[in-house]
Image (cartoon, rainbow, N blue to C red; front, side, top):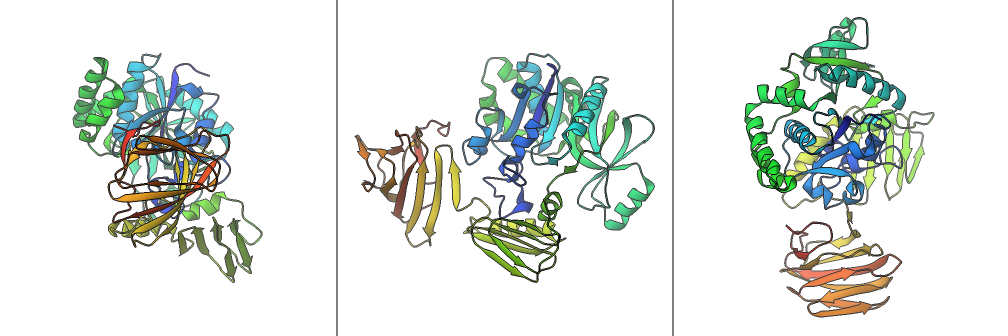
Length: 472
């Protein structure tokens, strides 16, 4: 392992094209799409042995670190963004922090999206070592994926292809139409833009200063504060929203004159659609990828995925069907890029939460599952609290809660009272009363919660104490 190489994994995307499995509060980088490991976990693992695990930093949303993705991020080095500002601010903050707080004055940075699949790890490691050597020469290095077919869903990079492993970049090309994509493949010298980069921290910061002066000014203002002793995460919380919303590709890479490309044939996919999920999956003799509770008769060329309910399909050809406990997606193969249109429509519906979270929502302390919610003044939930975990000390202004323990033993704080509630026992929490639920036992606590009130939104929570940093 090289002590001078650090990795920055970008994990702030929304993954809207993989709805309904990917939701705003738990996007695709935190999901297990093609195995038992999350995409973020697989991204970190493939960096070894070139990058030591303690040298990996994850840039993600502040809400993810205290929400559904807590278990995926717990124990990792994180840079938490209070709001989304695209990749250029994320890269700038990471480069400045690595210069200021790492053991290396000017580290080499590997920048990777958290939500890509790479099936050939050894080939990836080979490209990574070549890119790191090129970065030492003061170049901005990008991985150009050797294209397998004309693709309209990716941007392209044109490079001067010659002998050797590294090629000077001529230009970046926006996502083309199909005739243009076919022409570029026929001409040669064009690669898919992977969004994976390697560079020295000082070099990318110099290019940001040159091409994005507004971003640079905001960065320097924040940097001065944390170098004067303020906590850098608090500085981000207060000033990050002032940074411009721009990608590193558009802001720097497309304009820089020192960009090199490493041609990468590494089994790469950005998993940017359900069609891409089917391509990387294991397909049967009829070219179907079938996952979960599915009965398929005389079906071919389809993706059928069930999280809970039975999908019974007969005679389908070229269909994508994805079921979750609260939603079903149906579309033709080749049309799954348009799933983002569904998400946009759901966002525009002020009463819809289908794009935000699943029926079962993970929390740092365990999970809850909405069993019934019809906007009729009550909501029914199943709550599970892991051994040794506890919820925040909190109050609600619009609802009361009634808890019935069905497994384990609950310790309930309600106002000044603390009591133990065993299986079959219950507790009532009036509106406005300070309360807390915890599991001091050795088995998972399960209870049924009945909420009653005029407003039952999850944002009706005032926290006073919390083990997971959710009290500002």
